[in-house]
Length: 439
Image 1 (tube, rainbow, N blue to C red):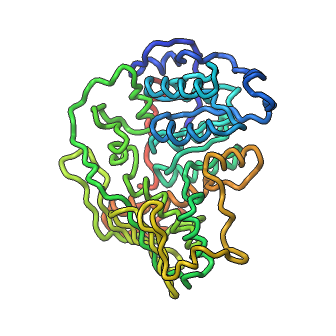
Image 2: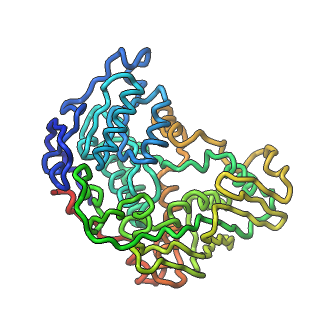
């Protein structure tokens, strides 16, 4: 269990040290101890109840250039705080927000726990490395914040815990995953679900293959403006090196992520599961064909893999390191997309253009940031909720576990266990570090 540890807030503009900011609970310039009241002059003709106040937690590339950028275009929400373990990133994001609104109303907050403690913040957007997604989301929900988080989960067990916490709190949780709102993948899923290629037999998914090999470097001093201890958070301790926390480097380390399989796999394999009517379940078996993990490197996650997933209805999904693509094969034809949002293909392209009467798929939704606001403000259906995130992550994480064991594994989606397989079952969860809590 993770407990919210709200610390006394003090205004301070000094640089972050490795542990000092956690002890002091410092805010950067622009933050205040008491709730911020947004003045009427800022809201225009919008009543405060019609504006969702938001904080952005994690303002790197995805957090700033995708999530924050899109939320800043919406007139029924206002970004009132940004938070990051990198002081420089936080300051840049804070400046972007203040320039957008033409005032100095956005707070810069180094410790996300201080964000969650603020009563004037309704919702948070979490754009952190993978190992923080669920722990931070759980803390946010328990603090009464509506939450949108990047994908995936790090373990199978934490995904179920997230589902349970969301149900208990009743707060909105959605996922920062765009595919159900991308026309290419929506049209493919629509065609397959509506029988345009007959009965689905097989799915081929290609995920990007690059070397992504990072050398083992000697431990080095942590930069003064980077809170590495908070970056590690629930992950077990790893010494700081100049390359460990680079965007692709951390994805290739098992302590923080499961590599391309759960990064890109969350995209294309979601379309596969939706087309197979399997978005609320998971594959029941994974066969390992081949894996390669770079030698003499910091990587401990395969960067090349060839996996075969089998679903309860006997449909198979082959996932291989190559290039982004997805292909569906049925008893009466085929369809697919070559490249990320690439060219749509089919045995008859009419199946991707026509409208289906009594269509067996939901209406195409708006992109994920707009959908989150619609869910919170108007009770719309989430593009992805906690259960969707958990089920898709579970499929991919069973693949990760199969690769760790280098053998076939069988999975029971109802019991959420590997039947009779103690070795695999121990890998459904992992011990979380608590060092960051009292630092």
